[in-house]
Length: 121
Image (tube, rainbow, N blue to C red; front, top):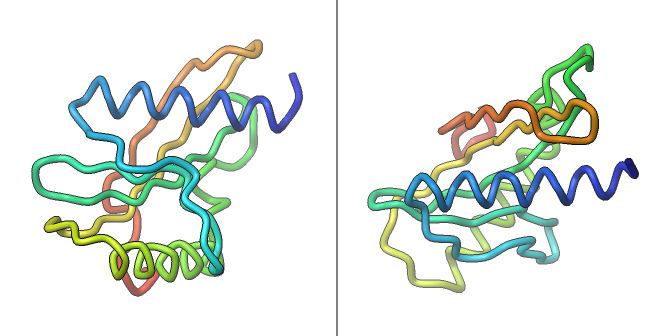
């Protein structure tokens, strides 16, 4: 399966997971001058800026390892711009959703809530 298609399918899998767990989807693939946020969702307490990473089950590194400091900085800057333009009364949180594929099908999902803070740590 094409790498872009697997990424899109991973994002769709993450969206379904979030909806199933009671999150309201605010935006998908939010783009601005700093970069892109895969999913922006909210629950009762948080506005969640979610980075989705998709990998095959036999990959040596976890998908979250791909969210390095540079990527986190871009996500934080994008989230700050989003928050500046939209009046949402929720505490921001940065999450990573790892979606693992085996034989072109999602086999496992790991939602890392609060994967990093507003400083990138």
